[in-house]
Image (cartoon, rainbow over all chains, first blue to last red; front, side):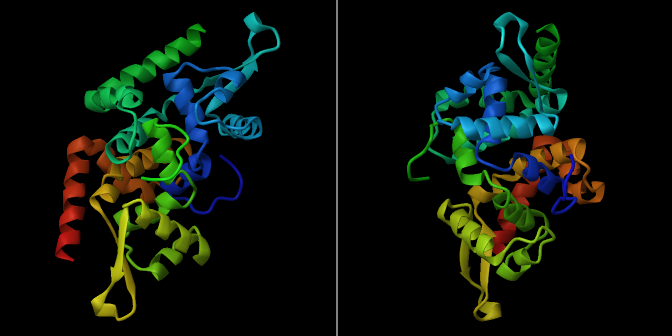
Length: 139
Length: 139
């Protein structure tokens, strides 16, 4: 993390990196929908513009949350993957999903995984994180 | 929740309400620093402008996360309090704090409560939530 920060409070620092309406949607897409390519993120229901997407991907990479490299199986296609720092965002994403399910007019089907992880507690979250990390190594 | 939403995904809906760099700082101040008055939020280290603060307080109220009423003990002073929906944001705030502590150059002292709650698990979080709610009823 670099640059001028508003305070050293960990909640503030997390919000300086993650606090906008788009960044965590990209992380969500990587965690729960297995998305890895620019066009896949662009196709998400929320309709992110390609300019916003490029900006947020670059910021996520800069903060060590994702990596970006060429996919040898797809020629020029670039592949994005979560790093260990990115995978450690799972509890944040799950807690947002649980709050959204309980307090907004959300689609229960879309929140199924978040609820399962919430019910499974820290052990279930850790298991999925380990799986995500080993998928990345294998990929 | 009202207005045109980007999708019915619970994570997206939560981000539509909370996804900016300021909103959850106000919630943090109410949860961990016992702040209730406009000037108290304005005095936070992050230096929110009074215009941004007024906008976010109004949005939080509109989304049922805080209430706003006159404080009889302070004449014209307005007091803001978390609702049950607001108190239910505690796991989100804690998970952001834990991630900030583990991944940013944060002040460990400022993250002490988040770490304690994280270590205490769901039971510790529930206890603090119950305490917050009973404080509000008593206030």
